[in-house]
Image 1 (cartoon, helix red, strand yellow):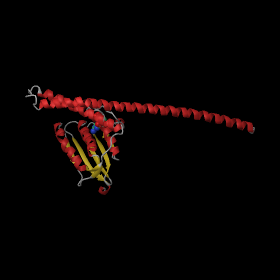
Image 2 (tube, rainbow, N blue to C red):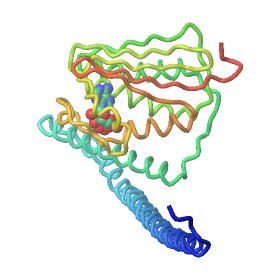
Image 3 (spheres, rainbow, N blue to C red):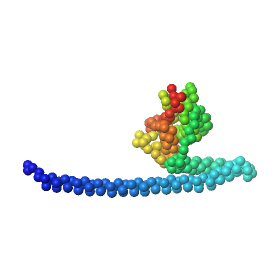
Image 4 (cartoon, protein in one colour):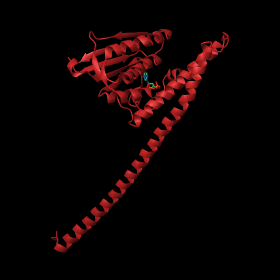
Length: 277
Ligand code: ADP
């Protein structure tokens, strides 16, 4: 092979340099385009959040008015309500109640996504919180011919929590367990301490979730079709909310499920240091 002379080396280096420069120019153009696209998506996302927030605010006022007036009629403020009309009014009241709870969910999520939600964390007894949720929901379980069992630990477990927000997480998990479980089955709520973690499990004997769907059930507006979802309705916001709130508490949420057998949701939360075993 002929040895390379200086001119050849020079030429080769110049060509490589030219190629490298044109690659850099290309990459810079790409980076600029990506930044512009990112900004466009950010604005679009903000516009969507603003819209949801505004629409929910606007919807809440008239919906609250409807609730108050139907409530007053049902309580007899406008005179005796004929028995033939009462069931229709009660249905209207329940539908309106559901509508308000959807609007409130949308508002909460819009607040969460805009970063405006600030937790107010206080020492909170987790066993007591779960007991009060279970007591509150137990009549709904009886109406649906289901059992709700609670297995608390021997001692109270204290965590640093924004109690009202965390309560909504467990309220939702327990309500889901009932919604996606047929009659005559049991839902079990348990709390245990493992080292520095409080571990809450909500276990049902319901329809379960397909393996392929498990990865997306914590996404916003994600509803997975199953044999009960048409019947029970929902927004697909409950588990999104649950994950975001648990994350803000430096905890984690996970799920194990077997289609046709049931699901178990597990929430892990850090115990206050002096209370860790
Ligand atoms: P929603 O119940 O309003 O649809 P969620 O965010 O609470 O929204 O739940 C998302 C989806 O996850 C539901 O549509 C349902 O298919 C599934 N899911 C949640 N909890 C359970 C459960 N305990 N058993 C079976 N499927 C569940």
